[in-house]
Image 1 (spheres, rainbow, N blue to C red):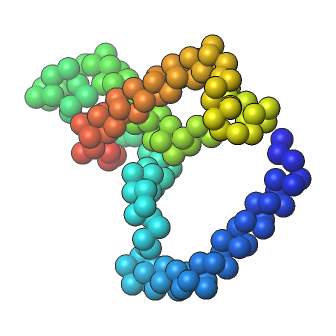
Image 2 (cartoon, one colour):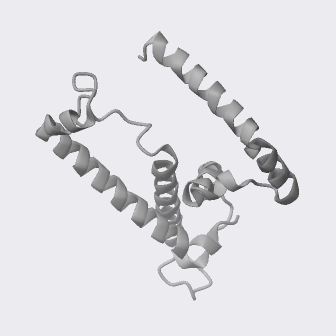
Length: 172
């Protein structure tokens, strides 16, 4: 739980930041950009995140959506017309697995460390100076943190590869 002074600082910081944007004319520029082209340049600062933020809720809803049809590429033999009930079940599971991987990848991209609480081993409360905090890292916690981040990176890479491979199957 954050301290009350943290929230007061955030309110102050956001207010000053907003006023600074107004005085510099950025808010007006962004407003005009949103009216002319539908988005402003702030969305381009991290386009990967912007795209993931747009795609994730749609992939999530699509994954929950009951699908009537299955793309031929999820069957063992895509050229075959008549499939048995077992083949339909296998294809349905293949499709579900692919869409789950996509959803998980976009979830990790959008939430980017905010959805879990693994301690990094860096104690900024005890050592407010960055250099001092990094010199006093708990190596076991840091190792666990790095392993989790590596695992998530692999999940993201695999999910994005599946997304690219099966992009044309996102229909029902």
